[in-house]
Image 1 (cartoon, one colour):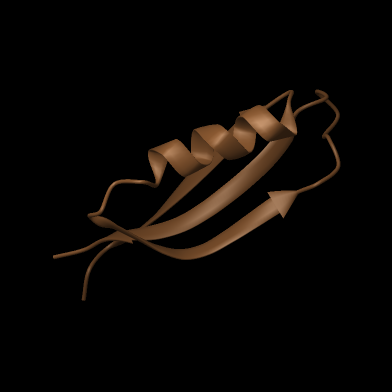
Image 2 (cartoon, rainbow, N blue to C red; image 1 turned 120 degrees about the vertical axis):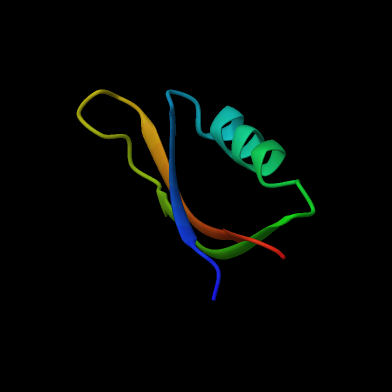
Length: 57
């Protein structure tokens, strides 16, 4: 059983945030388990995406 990791990404621009997350997860050794998006900005006016992932063996 491999370890599970959580990545939290934030940015003031949702489009830029989605591109940053896509770039980070493009590694072929990463298996994405779940992605959650906060489509409304938080109190700091930033959008959040939480990614649960594993490294492939």
